[in-house]
Image 1 (cartoon, rainbow, N blue to C red):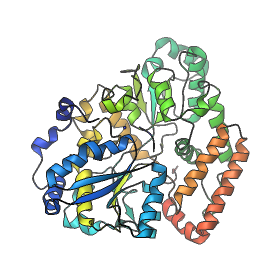
Image 2: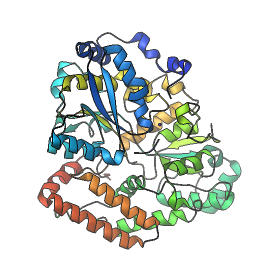
Image 3: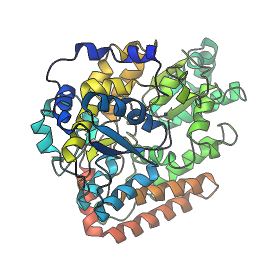
Image 4: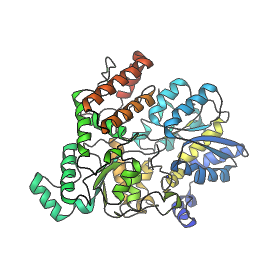
Length: 480
């Protein structure tokens, strides 16, 4: 994604890496370093999301790995929407241009079925990493690591959508009294989408144009993740499990689209064209009282790390100390993208590549990486959520980590099928049409038609098997 990313100053770097001084012997990071030294003088390549994300291996972990092991890391930056294609092209050409990979978990079944990913279990056992994998939060470990019970990637980014709201507005006595008198319940983070709309309208009526009730990003590819969440949480499904016919144009599917369009009416003018940065700027500048996005918004709203050179594009927060964190309406937020570290099956340096990703993903190194303000790796281990270091980074960091943990535990999985990138593209295009003024029912019908065409091209029987396996996972559909 293009969402969310110069090297830390010496002072801040020292602050963020205290764990190095008391690393236990024979932990996964040290094991990887010791084993990798035999490859000193070589170079491995790793595919990474272009933009701010890539500053992790370019400026921090790559140079550090070279210093520790003598192995140089070549970072191949690829835009997110091209990563799947580039990985598949390299595999089909047997070029071996990539050694290690960043893989969006919803792509993993497709890449595994094609043969593009190397199974990692033998490496995990050889280098004693299985125990540390248990520290990865279950939502990610149980859903983003294996295909057919084999490990193909290490979950490495705790992406989950969170609700951010203005505590100063929600806790204002006058606002609370007037809201209770008008709506009959307490002003608080919304529990459902009806409350979200009622609260948003109320704040807009009272405070606009200074502050509107809420704002969202509405341009591709971001809204499709919110759509996936809302469709399922309001009772919809993507397909009929028996026929594999798309059901996104059901009554529920149409109603969700209608609700999304209706919300724009009380949001700031022009919200239909907002991208990730537009929405971020509005919230940090105090123009909106609520928004939903990934974890970096919470750090930036608190002002954490935004003085770094690489973060100059992030508007200076006007809401430091005023932002609360909550689980999304209806209580089951979208995990939303994420990344896993894998090894390319065509790599000629598989062991060296594996050792690098074990070190990157280890408890020790990953804790350092998720605290770097410019890399956008979000907490994904239980030890990250409990980290005394992290919980002291700003006054509300503890509440932030607690909300990420809870949201992850309740998180919904992204749809994951063969040629998932095509289904994702169809959802993004459909939502663009919706926010451009197309009738919601027409949008829903068109989307169902596109889904059916993709399914037919893949093969209904083949896709039905993949869908059934995905739908059986606890995070696929909410249970009553």
